[in-house]
Length: 557
Image 1 (cartoon, one colour):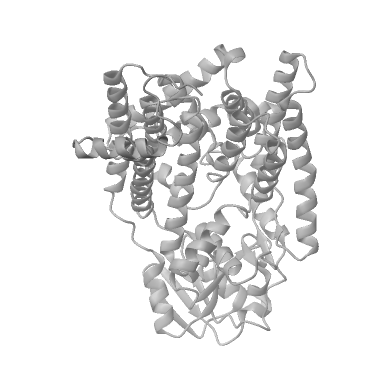
Image 2 (spheres, one colour):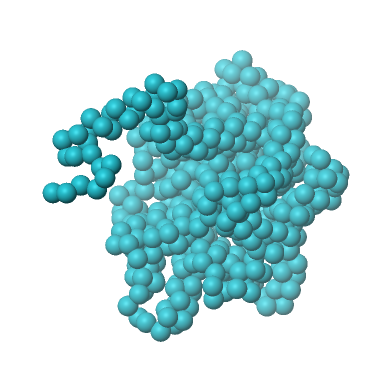
């Protein structure tokens, strides 16, 4: 065999490589192998450090908003899962269970931190971190180099702007309320976008959509229709039936049947009951008004509210408005370039349109309820980032300026929101008083019940009740466990009453008679009895919460 000039022979090749490396090291030059290793790990280390820093800021911001009974009930559900009640037997959950994301996060967090108020804040921060991570990965798809970092920082900037308002913190970092569901939807969109033709994509997509539907019906009514519509369009555009989109369509359709089957099996095995989602369609005459409410809700979600209501004042409002306009620009750009848009961009736009349409035609559109539209925020953040930051930035200086500007736009609202003082724990004085007086089991209105239970670490247990218009006191059949109201297992000896609560001192005395003793903690009144108050309550039933919701909607309309 004849070798080219300068090529080492077979026997000399290994030794020659070692000698070349030794010569480079002797001459004081950097080892190329080591240089490549450093280049491969430092970006990952940088992203991990950024994730840890973001989590710390989100946790600090979450602490500025006190935990309420919604988050406390989720914490109690996670506590039951941690202690072996995986199917949550006996529980009556709300119309969205968050069973496949937030509740496992609660169980894992409580395994480390125990049951306390900090748990709710940690889970809220982790959930929003997961949402932000999914949005960043989706925004960085097809980008390279400096553009990836700039797009990631732009997404965080859009997601951080609402945290300058108290309502934004309440929606995004107070307790699970459809925020985490957007992460499941974005994961499914990312899978379709990055691996449409792989064999594992259809079954994995079906599993993701099934899990999402079990936790939140929003996946059924938003993600699945968006996937079906976009895939149908791409099949028609390609004029071919046997494409990757066909398999994706079938997997999405199968997920509807499979999720219903899994839920039926869970119920058969004794899993939780739940209040069915409110799917009634509102009268057509109300749709224009609902469209206005949807617009206001989106303004609220992005934090584009009146200046005095933001931490940074006029600057905070302007920043949030810019983020909202960037999201609108991203949406419009995808619509304008629809034929050349990526699968993920088309899916995000269709999902936003579906969320908007469902809100407008449903009975869930009422003032102060932007939660049903919360997915628009991360979806809009992805579209804004992809529209405003090109996929490739060849000019190094321009790329670094883009990263610096996006990073500054993200850090300003995050650090400003993190400077807000932590919220006082309203349930702490009441919990301390109850423990000091040996009162460990009682009843109260919904907002004064489970928050006390979690505050005490489950040492003081307070269960929610609701007086009905006909004068009957019933267990609150929403985010509750039937065993809580079993008078053969528990002795409820006190009532927590509050002037502005549904359970006042007058109502408690009307239903249970005069108390043996009365205590006061601030504006709260504790009526102590020498009898088990649970014996006078009817059995718990989800219908109770449906009636409460019905009365509320009737008052709104």
